Image: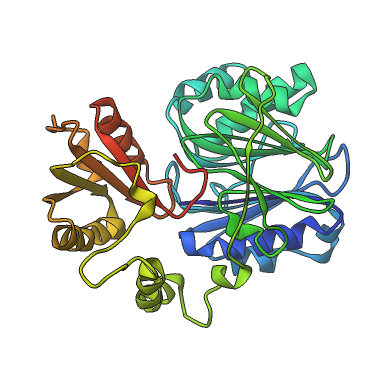
Length: 380
């Protein structure tokens, strides 16, 4: 549930990055940080603080406004506690390359041991710092940040969205994704990278959706996407249909309270025009699901699980199909009975709930038809 933002363009990167992080506060976090390329070829400026975004903002000063390329992150602690040191970004040995990361690097222990044997010193307890040092090594060999990112990603196990910036080319940001969302915002003479379109919705409504195991190179003028072997691919482009106001708290103390109060309108808007008469509901988007299902299984975690319980009542009332609701985190650890007439519905607002993603893949591997309800385009 971490937030990721990258910006490159003619405007001060710091203001764009902080604005994006503020719009991503709804995702929950315990620390925040930024890396800025203020002087080409010199060490990056990095500030990071535990706690709320305001703690980071109070540590920043006006000299940072001359950077036109930068990355920012809000972290929810996994490896290592919520401290200043463990907050992202993380640097390579030179201090000229910075990385931010959503997800889990499953083989970071062996990578860290390998790097330490080659003389690398680590400052944090995170899995992400291993990626920064590996990228630094690869960049030293190739001089190409995108090539370095591809080489490193081939060695990583787990899930990740990665962004990297190097002061030798301060207008370039390189990103990669596997099992974790990353979208590109295409602006006029400026471009954005983020884990959610809400980070840049105030500046552009043009977005590119990245696929699995793809690497993106972003400058103010150009966006290039490749697979992990360097073959250029064409990403899916789409228009964002909502505005910046929808991404704001709207006067509410926090996003959860806002979403609670928005529920009646959200339900009404969803059902608008779907009742051709008083005793039926019409969902044309589901016409491709032509199978006569005899059972529906809803998988989710946390508040999404609670939404699934409400869905059970509604589906059984309207569709007269029996519905079971399970915690996605438990689904893989038993031998579920699924058939071609079972529809598995997974729910995840962020699209990053790893237990739900893995449950979805498990259901697919067992031959079930699946349907996902998600608030993030580009999630898998």
